[in-house]
Every structure is written in structure tokens, then in C-alpha cells.
Amino acid sequence: MTKEESKNGSDDMLIDGPKQGNVIPDGFNPNYLKVYYGRLFPHADIFKWMSYGNDGRHPACDKSYFGRREFSFTLDNDIYLRFQSFNSESELENSIKEKCPSKIDIGPVYSVDPAKRHAYAQGGDNVFAPVERELIFDIDITDYDDVRYCCSGADVCLECWPLMTVAIKVIDTALRDDFGFDHILWVYSGRRGVHCWVCDGKARRLTNEQRGAIADYFRVYKGNENSNKKVSFPGPLHPFLVRSYTEVLREFFEEKLLLSQNLFSTEERYEKILSMIPDESVTSELRGKWQENRRSSNSKEDINFFRWEQLKNTLQSGKQKVVFVFPLTQKIVKSWIQLQYQPCLSFYGNLTREILEWMLIMNGRKPHLGNQLGFSDHHSCSLC
Picture 1 (tube, helix red, strand yellow):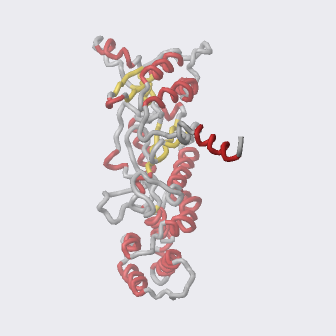
Picture 2 (cartoon, rainbow, N blue to C red):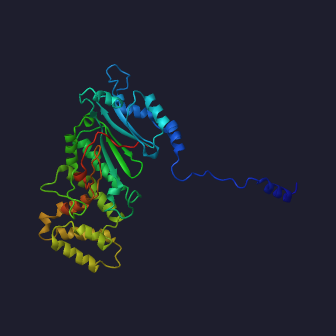
Picture 3 (cartoon, rainbow, N blue to C red):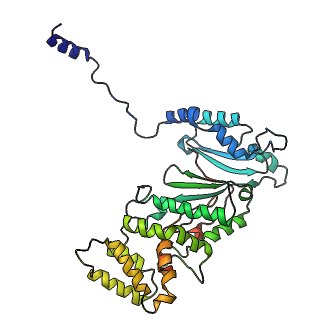
């Protein structure tokens, strides 16, 4: 066969056209759920975790424990199935594989099997009640939209994700060192943030009042979204706030957030910071300097760092030095790093305008727990 014949023969053999690569269809494909639940979902690990040793393998365990745990499934067309319960790992696995839920929520452990709650209710005694539920924190990146300029909504990048890392460091340290919790699990929520599960026995048995007390411990945010001053620090700062500032927030604010988000680069942005300073003479002086752009035009120093140093130096001058500086700059830093968290079931908070407001009070979370603090009988934590 000649070279020309060979070439023509090759062309004749391409009867099916060029091979197509693996194409992933757009949108959600329910068939993937079947594969996920059949091959990848950690049924055994979930059962072991949610049993907390009550798995029937030793005589002292509570064999009814896992069977009193509520699971909820979200199916196609937003069909929501609550009060699902299972007595074994195999029951849990078979039900999940059969129903292929698009979302699985984990609820509390009740006093009786939640699937049989109606039978107990007919007896006249109010015996159906939650007895254990994990303490859960939910940190969402969307709660940082007023202090990040690189992204918004559920979008996240390498410039703003460190805000979540800082939130984790502050909250995790407080939970371990201040409250003595040991069994803490941080997981990616699957979309726009992270979840923290505090699983110690004493955490699972907290009352609503005790959960509220933990929320108040982290609570720094005051007012509403229309308030200029979102944080209040009356009197000496609590050691928790001082530790968070000195060990985590100050370095992150000055070395990362200040530059990555260009906090002083425009008038609109630096006015947010000036609004946190209660002394009008200080804000007027700084505003005048920045509007006139007295900084040397050929300076290679970053404008954000330059204006931040100007702000600190102005606060340290004259009367403000003793009374005002350290607490106010700490207030700015703290209030500008929002730590959004949701301890168990429905409360939110974040601690970022606090980095800026802390840095303005101290060398000078926005937990918006206040209006949304509440507790229900049901967790909502997606497993898929």
C-alpha cells in the first residue's frame, strides 16, 4: 500500500467522526445521587458518629439511642420528610439509597422514637421532647459582603476565604479554652461557608437558656444594619476579646485584609472606617488629609497601609493617646473581621466590623445574634 493509499484509507475509516470527550451535563443530575449514596456516602461513619458509642456492641449502651434520632429528607419537588428514624446502620443505608434525598438534615435525639410520636401523644402525657442536640455554628461568607470587595453573595475567592479561617480560629479557641469543649468538628458546608459541630455530651445536653448564654458570650454586635456603630465595648475589654485581637485579628487585618480588600483605596470605603471614630475632630483631620491626597505621588507605599498608619498616628497624638488609642484601633480591627456563626439551630452572628471598630477602640461577629436568636427542635445541616 502506497503512502497516499494509506492516508486515504485512514480518512475512510473515520466513519463515526472525531471522538468526543467526556461531557458533563449542565445542572443537577439525579443519577449522580444514586452513585453517591451507593458508593461514596459514609453510612457507617454517620451511624458510628450519631450513636456516640450506643451502637449495641457493649452491654451498658443505650440500644434505643440511635433510633430516637430524627433525620429529615428533602426529595424531588421539595417534598420534605421529617421524623425519619432508624434502628440500625443498615436501615439508615437502605432508606437513603431507596429515597435518594437531595438533602439530609440531622435532628435531635428525642425522648422516644420520633416515628412513633403520635402513639405517645395519644396517651395524654407530653413525653415526646428533644433531649439531646449538638451545638452547631454556621459561618456564611455572605455575611461578609459589607467588608469584602472582591466577591459578593455565595461567590468566594482566595482573597476573602481567609475571613472564614479567622472566624474558625477565634471561635474554636474560645470553645476549647473558655468552655472546655473537646469534640469539635469543622466541615465545609457545601456552598458558602463552614459548619462547626460541638459534639461533647455536655454540649448536646445544653438547655436553650444555656445555649443562649454561650451566644451572649460571643455577642459583640449591637444595633441593626443601618447603624454606623455596630459594636459596643463598655468598660475594660473581656479577656476573650483581647486574646482574639492580639493573637489572631490584628495580624490578619494589617497583613492580609487591609491590602487584599483595599479598605482605604476610595472615599466610600474609608468613610466606613471614619464613621467608627466618635471624635469628630479626628475624623475631620483624617478626611482632610485623604481628600487632599497629601501622600507623595511617587511613593511606593501602598495607600491602604499608608492611610491606616496615618489613622493610628493621629489617634496617638494629643489627648487621644491615653484615653482613646488602644481600645479604638482594636475596635476597628475587630469590627472589620466579621465572624458569622450560628450556634445550634437558628442563631447567627458575625465579628468583622468588629475588627475595624476594635482596632479603632484598641490601638484605635458582627454577631447579629440579637434579632435572630432562637431555638427549634430541629437542626438543619445538610450532609450532601
